[in-house]
Amino acid sequence: MSWQQRLAQALDRRRAADGWRQRPVIDHQTTRTLHSGGRLYRHFSSNDYLGLTQHPALIAGWQRGAEQAGAGAGASGHVTGYHRQHAALEAQLADWLGYDRALLFISGFAANQAVIHLLGEENDRILADKLTHASLLDAASHSPAQLRRFTHNSPASLAARLASPCSGETLVVTEGIFSMDGDSAPLAAIAAQTRDAQGWLLVDDAHGIGVTGEQGRGSCWQQGIKPELLVVTFGKAFGVSGAALLCDAQTADYFVQFSRHLIYSTAMPAAQAAALQASLGQVQQGDALRQRLQENIQRFRRGAASLPWQLMDSVSAIQPLIVGDNAEAMALSARLAEAGCWVSPIRPPTVPPGTARLRITLTAAHQPDDIDILLEALHDAAG
Ligand SMILES: *Cc1c(COP(=O)(O)O)cnc(C)c1O
Image (cartoon, rainbow, N blue to C red):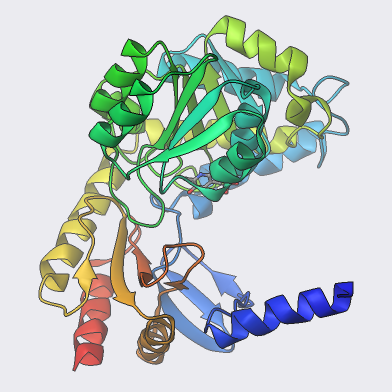
């Protein structure tokens, strides 16, 4: 088989499964609205949960940062790319979340890959929730450590995995809020079990940071745990992009010495670190935004309870409606688009086969009217 044939076969299979993916061209968007193909939609597919992407303080932070430090970092942090803006942001994050140190990464994907890549050695095991993000599972499946997955959000299943012997170290991996289901992990039980087994816990809180917990400190703070390794990302509630690993001083030293993702990659622009400091300030004083988001979530759930599709058991900004069939999910998304609501369908392999869904995301920027119009369109589509 040639390269061309291999690619053609994979593409044919994807088309035949109603799984063909496209990147819609967006002409303009705010957290609440989206212009594409000459039409204006209400926007229910953004992870900008607090509406900070548009915030003047963040935009001013980027602009001032770029004027002072240039558009790009110019080198990896180990050469000359580590600006005082990066150092300041790391110190603020560590202080805010109660860790010795924070290390910045260019994305959540990179941070997760870096952690798994660096820590997993032969004879170790990585025990990951079945629904953890692709960035974690991909890295774990390429790691010399053995990857075992436990039943989603099941401390009992984790306990059974932990009970089998392992000659190396154990890394347990889960998420604060799951990206495609919107539900929360039982972190206290998972942390206690991990500790009893002398393992380390990694929590990816991409969807919890900024949104939940006191001052938006996230799922771990809210559930009263402090995992050895906490990854927070800045492309969602923080309204920018990038990520940080929170850990103790020795672990941070180890990453600075040995993490190839830090050493061989250009640092994030200092201007971005400046924008992120502005964002952190908004997140910390964001109680009113978090309150508005909660009201929107409750308004949506009240109205969606009688829909014929399964509404996931989620109290987060992620409110998926499980449709099941790929083509049906696409058709429902198209119906909503006709009614002026932009809701992305999510299909396998991003979610398990037979669980294609509409992933509705709510934000603090939505008005009650936006939610009501979405609900009306869903009820109309249900017939
Ligand atoms: C979005 C996401 C990531 C990736 O973060 P990026 O900064 O977008 O690369 C990692 N983990 C989870 C759970 C996510 O939802």
